[in-house]
Structure formats: structure tokens, C-alpha cells
Amino acid sequence: MGTSSNANRAHLVLCSQAKALGTVRPMANNLKRLRTERELSQTELADRMNTTRNQIAKLESGARRLSDVWISRAAVALRVDPGALVADSMLVDVVGYVGAGSMITYYGEDEGSLETVDRPPGASDETVAVRVKGDSMPGVAEDRWILYYDKRVRSVPDEWVNQLCVVWLPNERVYVKKVYRGRDPGTFDLISTGHYEPMRDEEVEWSAKVQWIKPA
Image (cartoon, rainbow, N blue to C red; front, side, top):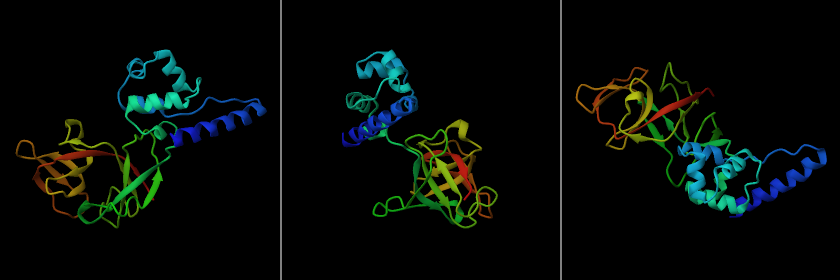
């Protein structure tokens, strides 16, 4: 609870300063974003937190302060760390790089994330980034550009076919490719934008749609 306590103390200081200036602003928090990312209504979250929908609306708008008690309840209801409710999440981790053949190399656990980059609009708690290395993705992204992707799902959803995706194959290789349907049921053709040969009739275990591309 240290993170939430510190955040609330900081909020009280800011409120005191704002009152002195005659401009008190609502307390910003991440409750609404975390709720909508989990596709919960205000009523559903209220039930989980043993409160009313009106109370949730006030907490989300900042009209009522998200105290330690409410942070604790919301963290349990949303299954998140308490700090996620008040943290200023303006950055996301770069978890690896895209190299030859549009293959992703992830940083090892001992390395962790070697850098962070600006959080794109509409990003979720599961948004991460990879950095393009060299001319591995001509026509799509240049050297040191950033690709952002979000939560991965099993196989490839119909709406992601013909789109640029991160794909995980059974042999533990991970690529950034345009995904098309393969000849055999349940398989996919993975196409690079460069001079690399297409990967035909591949089984895809997991996929995540590339949501944003940011120039260096």
C-alpha cells in the first residue's frame, strides 16, 4: 500500500496548493481506464467493490477522492497492483527488437526492459513495444522505429487477417508479419515487406495486432 499512500499524500499537497490559487481540480486516477479495459460496466464494478454505481462514477471523475480504502477495494476487484490505479503510466517497456526476417528477439529476463518509450493513445496495461533494427521492415518501418502491440490471443482472429501482426509459432520463434490465410485449414501465410521469402502454411499459436508505429 506504500505506492497508493504516497500518491494520496501527494494529492493532498497539490490540493492545498490549488486551493491557495483558487483552482481545485479533480484527482486523476486510472479507475475508468482499468474498468473499461476489462469490459466492466460501472454497475458491475460497483458490485465487486460492494458499493453503488454512483460512487464509482464519482471516483472515476475525481469528484470523490480515491482513498487508500477505495484503492484497496478496486485493486482486488480489478486484480491489479494498487499502484496501477494512481500511477502516471505515460511510458511502456521496449521488450525486444525486430531484426533480419522481421524476427523479434526478446531481451532476456536478466536484462529486463532496456528502455521505455512514450505510451501511445488508447494503450492498455498490456501494451509493450519492440524497436526495429536496420532495414528489416522496408516500406513499413525504418531503423529504430517503434512498433507497439497489445494483448496476445490464441491463433489469429478473423479481423486480423490481412493485417500486420506479431505472431508466435510453435517452435518459439516470433515474427512481425502480414498475416494471410494459408491453403490448409488453420494455417496462415506470413509475408514480409522486404526481400524475405514468404512463410507458407504456418501454424500460429498466438498473435497480437500491431496497433501503432512510431518513427524514431
